Length: 355
Image 1: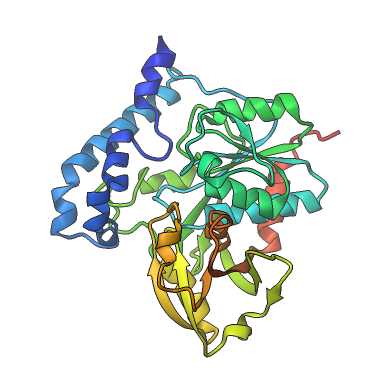
Image 2 (image 1 turned 90 degrees about the vertical axis):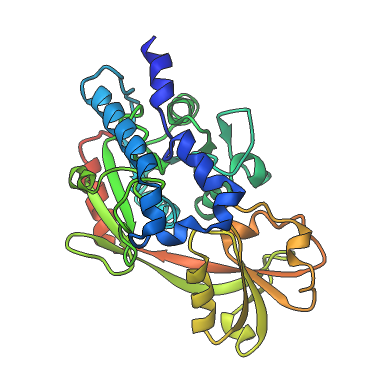
């Protein structure tokens, strides 16, 4: 009975009602997200919906705190990397860095992804080199490619965690997003925030970017800022390495290879302007072409640009392998966090016996 009631309160970062606002094409046309950085007349109109969102959050969290809704404990340490705002803070980059760091320390890492942007109905699904990003989600494929860890895509974190525990000899699980998925008990919480945008206008969805109240940060173990950290936050930065051709990944060129040349820069990510600025800072003359986050690319998206090199993020590149007739290149970025952050995670994991 409680399980069925909890389903009505459950969200995976966003309540369904709010999701309709954010994903609806009309909503995109109005670019309401661009108003989240400030309080305005437009955001004021959405405040009634934000009050409803906040009410559901408070009730749901209270039900977990009072153990009316019960969280499930997996017999492995669980690290959740998430945020209290919507998208574009660097969660996936943090997961990739942390997974590789823990691997270098000798730990066997399993990673849980929500599969957002995918449409696969068979869950949980283990990611392989042949996985279709339109089925399992582009972030899951990107994480697998960059970490070579056991990665599972599933909307339900509990199912993913059980699957990993039962089928693999692992030392630790990392959950990409899921800070608000209270049904899965966690041992370490890591919060990632955009260092400049921070919490925007500090309104709940859909009037603002907040998924939880700002005071929630006080309960989190470790905090990261993507650029411009404050107080006890660790800084996440990006270092452009090189470009590689999608049709032949072994074909590598320095970014300077395209310096002073006109290129088409495409980005279907939460903050596409950041990608464009990286390219332009290296002297490239970009024709900017942003797309919505998790965009499903088609050949028509690039029509008219057959003569230009087309540069994109690795997250977008995994969705363009089947498109032919264009000169696609992807930029390899190195995700950088201080060693002190990794050491802090290890220290918190010392409680667990890895045999």
